[in-house]
Every structure is written in structure tokens, then in C-alpha cells.
Length: 67
Image (cartoon, rainbow, N blue to C red):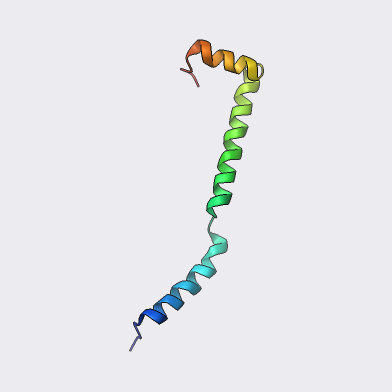
């Protein structure tokens, strides 16, 4: 018969969580990766339009319709 007490289920859940932790992407790492991807895409868009000043001018004149 299985022991369904709270103590045993908590220990089992803790052990499972500790084993799965390296496999999961941590929230801080995920946020950092997303921010780096956004930064890369923004820099790429600025480079396509001739630099940051030209990019901002393009946003202001175009209303950001194509951004």
C-alpha cells in the first residue's frame, strides 16, 4: 500500500524538481536571451536604414507603420 502522507509526497516532488532543474530554462536566462535577440534585431534594423539617427528619422516621418 502506498503512503500518501504529505511528508512523502513533498520529498518526492522536491527530488523530481531538483532533477529536472538543469533541463529547464531559467527565467533570468530566458529574459536575457530575449533581450539580446531584441537588441540584435533593433541594431540590424538601424543598420539597414543608415544608422541610429536615420532610423529615428524614419520612425518619425513614417509614423512607424513599417516598424
